Image (cartoon, rainbow, N blue to C red; front, side, top):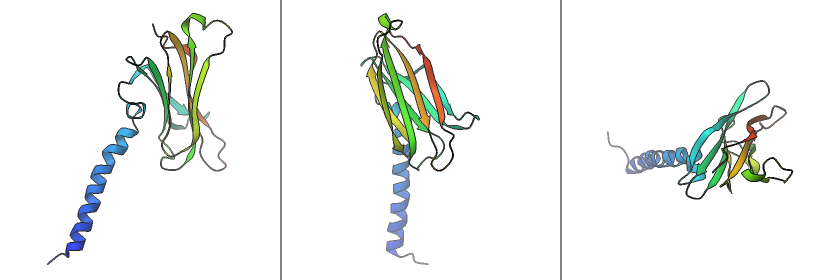
Length: 158
């Protein structure tokens, strides 16, 4: 049986597009891939983003780059992926020397309707303490907003 040349070319194109697209998508959706070169996860910097009833919609990550002395936060969805839903990633930074005073911390946030993740949210954090937070909300009438992160000061750089 002879297979038409167009069918062979079409099949080859489909196979190649799947092979080439998958690694790029997978790398872009890792916290390190989103934050960029030199960023690594910090101790205690991986938190589930869950609803009050315990449904997990994703994960929020805190990363640090020792070369640039920046923190990075990203919230990655594990539910509703590929569909634009409200997602946020937030980083709050307070210089270590004044964290117990009434000075306002620096807050950086990325929020909107995203298919896969919110962020990266980056800010310089040498000699600073940080908090991080993420939210994911489904579309429709489901009022269950998933939240996660750390609302106490931590990862205080030297």
